[in-house]
Image (cartoon, rainbow, N blue to C red):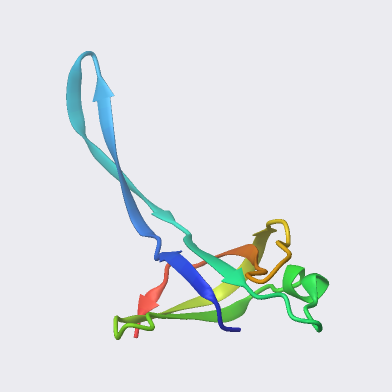
Length: 102
């Protein structure tokens, strides 16, 4: 599905460990990737099919020649309101394992 969007590739998140007015180091955790896309809801737009997406492969490609990313095991997160009019769109968020640059 083509549209516009933004990607947080996920991966490692660092957290500062503090206590007693001092910094004691850091800890790291793995965080999911997040893909937010604006889709154009055409006449055959099936919101229920989108909501059922689970363990899919999602590819994010920069239209201006930037890198492409792949999220394996992506799943549906949430869907925004469908906007009507000439610039009709609906925002959809997917989550998945950390994205890999391809």
